[in-house]
Length: 120
Image 1 (tube, rainbow, N blue to C red):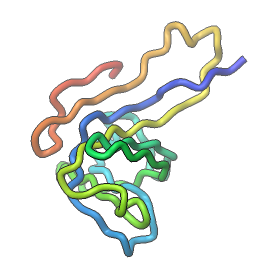
Image 2: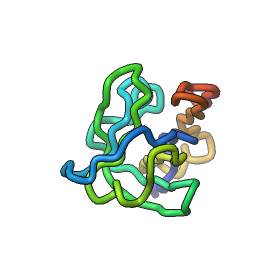
Image 3: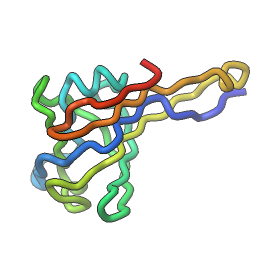
Image 4: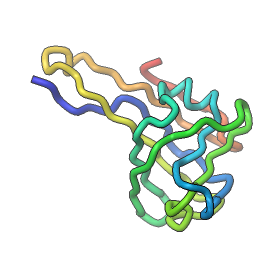
C-alpha cells in the first residue's frame, strides 16, 4: 500500500513579486528549489500565513541566489509582496517505509535566506 506524505517544504518564504498577467505558477529561486528537492513544473500546495489562503499551482525556476518568490497568474490575487508562504510538495511512499520517511524542509529568514534545514 502507498501513503501520501510530505516530500518537500519551504517554510516562511516571503513573496517578492506578483505577476497577474503571467500564465500561472509560482517562481522560486533555483537554489531554494534544489535545496528543498522541488523539480521544475512540480505540483505544489501553498498556504499564505498572512491571510489563510491556500492554493495549488506548479513551481518554476527563478534566478539562482535571488531569493525570488513570485506569485504568477491567478494566484497573484491570493497574496501580496511581503506575505509569508509555506510551499509544500507531496509524494507516494510505500507504507513499509513510511514510518522512516523524512521530508526535506527548509526554513527561510530575511531576504529568503535559509536559516534552518532538515531531512537534507
